[in-house]
Length: 109
Image (cartoon, rainbow, N blue to C red; front, side, top):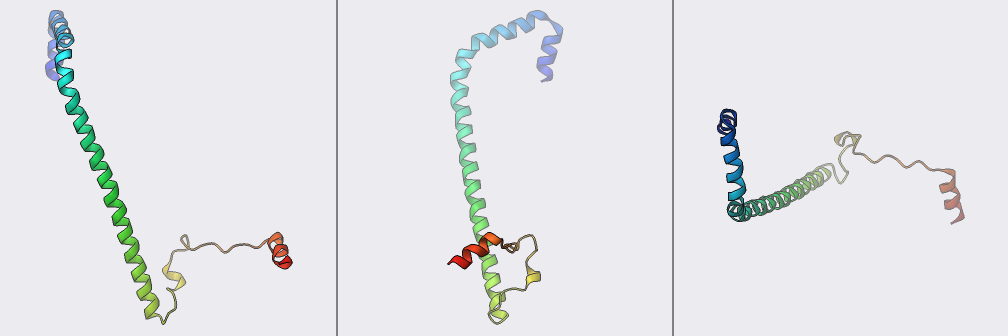
C-alpha cells in the first residue's frame, strides 16, 4: 500500500490519472476477476461443507467410543452401570419433582 500512498502524496495529476485509468480498465478487469473470485468462493464453500461433515463424523466416532467404554465398564461391574461419581453432576438428569396434580392424575387411573 506504500506505493499508492506515495503516488497520491506527490502529485495530484498522478492521482487523477490512476482514477481515470481505473475507470477505463474496469470493463476489462471485472469480467476477468469476477469468475476467479466466484471460483474461490465456491472452493471455500466446498471446504467448509467438507469440514462440517468431518467434524460430525468425528463426533459420532467419539460417541460410539464412549458407548463402548460404558458398556465395558458395565460388563466389568457385573451388569451394573458405571458408578454415580463417574458421571459429572451437571450431566445427570435432575429428579422429577412430583406435584399434587401429578399425584391426582395417577390416583384417577
